[in-house]
Image (cartoon, rainbow, N blue to C red; front, side, top):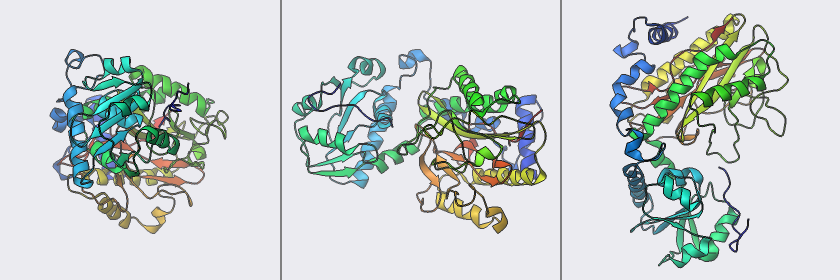
Length: 464
């Protein structure tokens, strides 16, 4: 319902490395001996999480310690706000006030996704003005400065000083919403705070890592153990998508996948049988997806049926209490794929292993990208990270409250990695006539290299 402010609401926003990973997978799931990877470090996987167990579990106690299930602790929210203000002080000297509208950033800073605006002054207490639902905001957030409003007029009346320059999420806030806000907060200049919030969010706290560890465990279990049991000859991609969604939610997935990129829509993930995994798509990633129809190019085709010898490709996210992991798994249905596909896939696995070892504090994403790409043969680069002219220029990306966060393993991303960043590595290569091979897992940056949150099965799981 539109009120006096014109308020309508907010928009939604084989080789040794290959063999080592199979041995580790066997050790984790079947009780075999765990062997060391290169450099004397455990070849990661969930067994490797022991090195960061204190990081992943510190901040996460019983539900009674944090209120209702899913409530973000007060100290966590205060720390986030403090880091955001410090980043604004560093990057935007003299800033006076920021206004946060986007659902993801509202959740990050308040612990609740409600319809309103968070006003953050450079000094003094913020105020989260909530139009709907104030009652739920009070229930879900431990913050003391949450107030009800019927529209921006109420918030403006209680704001003692309106600066001439406001900092907004210019990647999120529509012009019409900004103008409605300006009607009661008559600022003359808008500056962006998108980069500052993205950079703050890129380094995960122990509390956040604990949620991502839970998401990763579900992700690993469903894609590596449940999906082979779901695959049936003659089923459609869309049918697999529906059953995959049910399996993930049953295991604890939050049911929604969120992206920060404008107008990005994904249901469950990208699902493709054979060459459908190369199908053109507007999504900025190496894989493809035919989707349900032109109006809904998501989930998977309701017409393409699974047959013997098909490559099955699944690239999707799994979330717990807002925090997501990103993972790709491939399967060989009915019979092995041609040796060309197997050899190409093995090389992608090697590339992921190499990049994972480079995920240490101080490393530059652009340097990781350059080091990997420079070592690849021209023949391999053809259809690497896509197919034809539909290739992407990155090898990995940050993951968290949205699937596409900072940092990005790509040219131009020169800021050094920091401990606690979470990054999905996804080397993939299209093979005409077969589909998209390759792999993807989500890692935590640690002093010893990346540690996988989503398992380390090398993929192309054989499904008889």
